[in-house]
Image 1 (cartoon, rainbow, N blue to C red):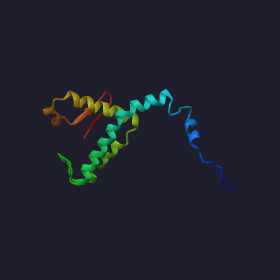
Image 2: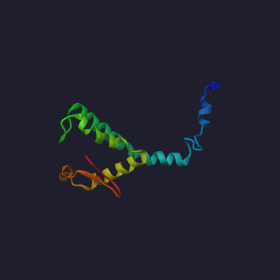
Image 3: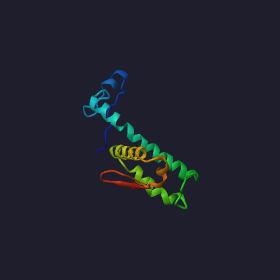
Image 4: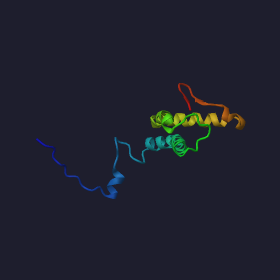
Length: 120
């Protein structure tokens, strides 16, 4: 007994507006609030992208590795975080950055929060 193909139809534009996933549509206040709260988390994505760019192009400052594959586990650890963790990490980094005097920023090596620490 094989798998039978289902008769799928093309979704039209008016139908897209009606689509809801698990009862949450794009205009649902819970969905909108989550997206708004997640906005800060995209800083973490940008940080990963910037680190990766500079590692791959050899333009990183303060390098403590010989080849890019040595830093890869750290970048993978940063990338393995979920959206909520990225939100927390981004907020912690920004708080750290705002509280540190400009002359002291290069002396600190970690971002701490209640239950975790990222060191790079």
